[in-house]
Structures are given as C-alpha cells and as structure tokens.
Image (tube, rainbow, N blue to C red; front, top):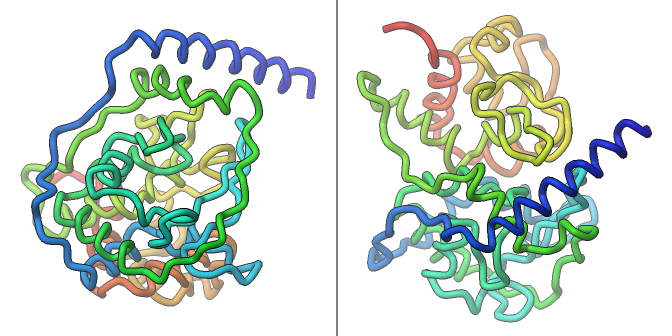
Length: 297
C-alpha cells in the first residue's frame, strides 16, 4: 500500500510538471474536418452503436434514461462519470455546435476545456468526417433529458484540466484512419472499427502510470486501471480460446463463447448495447481483423 501511494505521489508530481509544460506547448490538433457534409441521423444511430455511446452514457443499473449519464469509471486518477449527451441544451450537449462536437471527438477539447482520456478521443479521432457529422445529427435528434449526470469525483491536481495539455503533447496524436496497404476492404473495415469508433484497443491494452495506452502492447489485455480489467484480444489469445472468425463474430452477436460460456460484466453490456446491433458484415470485419492482424500475407 505504501509503495502504491508512493507511485501515485510520483505520478501526481509528473502530471503536474507535464501540465505546467503543456501551458507553453502548442495545441494538439489534427487535420481539419469537412463539417459541411449533411448529417444523416438514421445512419448516426448506427454509428452511436458502433461507438458504444449507449453502453457508456446510460446508467441502466439505476434505471437511468438512455444517454443521460453513465456509471462512473473508477481509475487511479479519480472516478469519471460519463455525462449526459442527450439533446438537452443545459444538462446535455444540445447547445453544442457541430464544430464543438468535432473538436471533442477529434482533438479532445470540449466547451469546458481539455477532456480526459477516459473519453476515448484517442480512438474517435480516427473516425471519418461522415461518421462524425452523422453521429452529431443523431445525438441532436435524441429526446432531451433535463437531468444532469452525477458529478465526477476527480481529486486535485487531476481536476485541473490544464494538465491535459501536457498529457496530450506527450501521448496524443490526432489523425484520421488510413487503410493498411495490401489488405482487403473487410480487414480494413475491421481495423477501422477496432482502433476507431468501437475503441476495442482502448479497453484491451495496458496503460502506463499516467494513463496512456501502451501501443506496443496493443490488444495484449489490461490488468485494470483506467481501461478496466480486460482480456487479451491478440490472435494467439483468441485462437487459444477456441475462436475463429465465424465464432468470434457470433459471440459479438449473442455473447456465447466457443467454450459454452456467456460473457457478462462490461463486455456483456457492450454486446447488449452495441455489437448485437451491428451488421453481420461489421461483426465479421472486426473478427477478421483481430484474427488476421500480424499475419504475413
């Protein structure tokens, strides 16, 4: 326990120093988006399921309204409560412009300032311009829920959003998805989903002491912390569990594993609120990517 506290203190000092340096560093911004595209709310409803918005921003356990605020995510830096993202102009994001929404998705900056990586903008930044404007249209079309989400519990100094300016300069590179050369459309669609809107890599990858993803260990599993406890999704790990592309796609639909188990907990919620709504093509695409990534052609 003493050692854990010592590392936390060192982390506080490091983050504070990074944040102070961040004040003098340039803003971290990605390529400009085309926000003149016409948003399709119906298609955006599907993007909402791809991105896990419903599972994260709904407190189903407490009987909360859809998208009106989720269950707190406990981390070493505090408890982050997913906010109300309905169209209510006060409690939700109904007053946000499409540019503000895009800045949050793409660059991790909201009207309130720098956003914490508990919101997976590291992944959402990869989303296509059309997916972003469609998602915005869908959220603006949701029923407004006037009740604000519970407050996050973030202790000092982590509640100082300026710290995130330094964190981003160290760990965040806003960019758009680029298809992998030499791979087919199915593989690249799966990679887009896993690395982008579905943000599988965010939960199934370990993080360093400052909460940044260890990209060289992508999909190696997370022992806990900011991303929560999650098993490995490497090809080797999946094959060892008896998965092939067909069975993994099926598990994402109904939650049943090749070992005749049923996935529960956070992954059960993801399946119930997200992947079970996906098209068969998208479930097959992400299964193909996860089971073929790293193989030689």
